[in-house]
Length: 416
Ligand code: UD1
Image 1 (cartoon, rainbow, N blue to C red):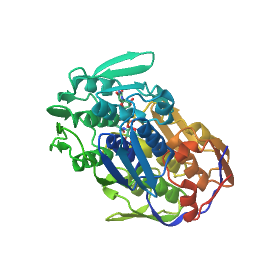
Image 2: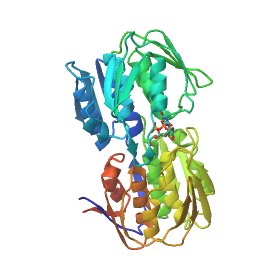
Image 3: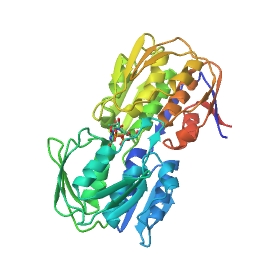
Image 4: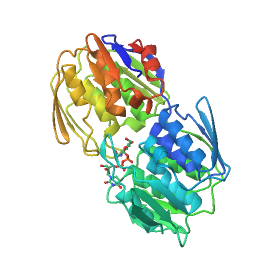
């Protein structure tokens, strides 16, 4: 099994372009199913993107990838059923549901079940799709969806601004009959990116000033050329890696505005930040200060995906930091591994109290999930001695050429 051997202690320095956002690319790939043809630029080379392409092949699309450009062409002859093994290959495969229903008027997919972040309910997705005229039969872990009267626009209010449910509503509603009004929709930049892709492909979607999303159904989508937004979570991860090692890094191809709730936390910790256009430069202090209290929230709040790497940073800061995770139940799984390095972290339900220690020691650790794995790598980069990080396939789901990028910044990381 591949692993990373990380020799900690080298401050990271240098410049790095940030790849396209996984959480934007996957829904855009799902949306491409609704189009005749789509060309998607800045698509990150990740195992989750490969999994999405495999699903598209099954659904009747031909795809090709050259560098960071993926072309998707609907050729027909596909199936409206996604096999269980393909659904399981990717945590966010449920985002295909709305697109399959939009394309075929029916869908059959297995329930996503649990994942490394805890149970993954999809009740909001299903309730919203039912409002659009989808009949859903749930039995034996399989969802069988039909639309006896076609998809029909409706007024929907989400009980929580779920990213996945918002994406599924957008995908199903854009070719439904009539108008859909979606209240309390998610506002993540990845949602805006999906809306931009759909509108450029021929959809009619508008976001009102109060955040309500208004969709006027159209007969079909032709497709477009689209550039995926930069990955704000990868950017936050590399900033954490530079900060925790006492280094300085300049990230290019980023969107500082997408990190508006995350960047002030680096300043709280004593880092100097300079942002202009698509560049973020960070200079770390000799010793980080506590990050205070970090509460994860739906966008524009502090992203749950940036919490794990920030916690690694807090583990080495002077003073006490408190994390409150409001989005996912099991988002501190990596903490047990961090303790092996000598971190002082206490987790009680959704709260983690981090007493910063002056030094972490290298250890052998297992990645527990995507962001947790990146968080362990961040800690190992700053630890004294060597760490062996196993189960790194989790990291490959969300970070393009992770070890190579770290080496570019001067880290001593070897793939073994
Ligand atoms: C979430 C994050 C998103 C992140 C993504 C990838 C939020 C609000 N969402 O999106 O920023 O990029 O993970 O890691 O930060 N829920 C239900 N029923 C449902 C759907 C969701 O109870 O039908 C609950 C979930 O269990 C969770 C919360 O709502 O506690 C947020 O879920 P949702 O936004 O849908 O998750 P993702 O789409 O995975």
